[in-house]
Picture 1 (cartoon, rainbow, N blue to C red):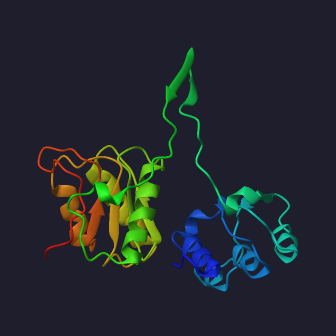
Picture 2: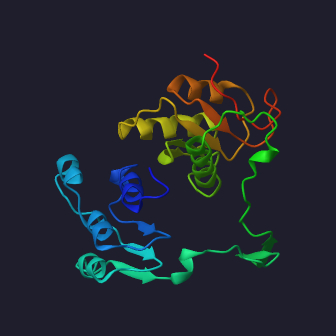
Length: 235
């Protein structure tokens, strides 16, 4: 997946889990050109796998659409195209509090826009390359902003999301994510993981290491892992 080439970014997003796109939404911070619009419309690779070349996206949001993309993507009557120029340069909400309705009142809490600061990790490897750092950011953002039933774990390789899983325990979440990645035939060797819940024991990281993960990041806590993880695989 590329930070600089929108076409490669779209390919990576669509084929992370192509079965998931029988509906769904795509939001970008770059222009949807005619070429990108065609990628979001149909794919011969998808046709070979599922016998149908057309992506069933319900919503596409971007800062700008070229006319060719509007004409093509608009062929599906139920698909909505939203244009928002502020996506070129998104900013964080400056309000100190966010409010969520609950029965009989509301919940006040800080807004959910925490930024990952790798300087807070005392055991950060010194030889991390840019692709690895980018992959960590993607994995962390997905794990901390997904809703898969708790204990979310995400798997990322070369900046590309491979799978996400959740469950009643971190091990269940890991096994779900690994199964989803396997179903999509992703190679996990050299991948990294992120979790939104701490690991109470070493069983979870050991399973991930055996699957091919080389690095991982998780919150502080746990009986045997009382620190944030960012541990390169040792075997």
